[in-house]
Length: 114
Length: 115
Image (cartoon, rainbow over all chains, first blue to last red):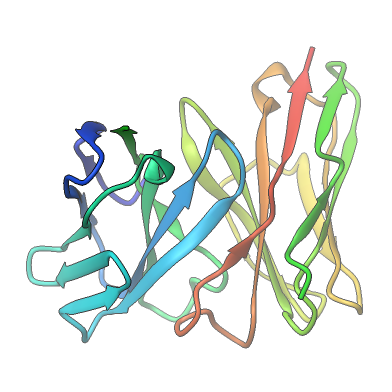
């Protein structure tokens, strides 16, 4: 079963615009991670934010985490056509028994038009 | 350094057959997890191995099994294939007891089609 929802399901923007994707989850977490997937291939790890962190930056990526609302957002600034992909949030659930297990959202399909 | 390697890349099998998929993690990574990705169910966790021990298992029938070797390479096996087993199977590896600091590195996947 999926941990939560991602919003929007699909996002279409022009190059140079910012893209924001949201993720909600249901349980307590150790951390939340964002991954990118191009055309049904493997997932690429983008960024990890721990449960005691509120914001993190990596290059053109900015991630926020609100554990009180059980939600996260991923902002990609100055989007490029090469950013076209599916983006997934994934949670590492707290509790000590979630070894190796990430629970994924359904993903947001981002299309960046040149 | 080499990434996570999954073989084969594509596979076509007939209902009722069995299949074995292979995953070689990044050198030094001792944790290997497997996921199934389908359009309907999305990404679902199958199982995780660390130092040859299965530490965690998802909600899949017993037809799905796996193992890990002493060099951390892992295999997963699906017996008595069903049409619904058609999916992209992804393997991921991480360094250390948990991936709380670094996340996971995924392979490119094995695309299994059951006909």
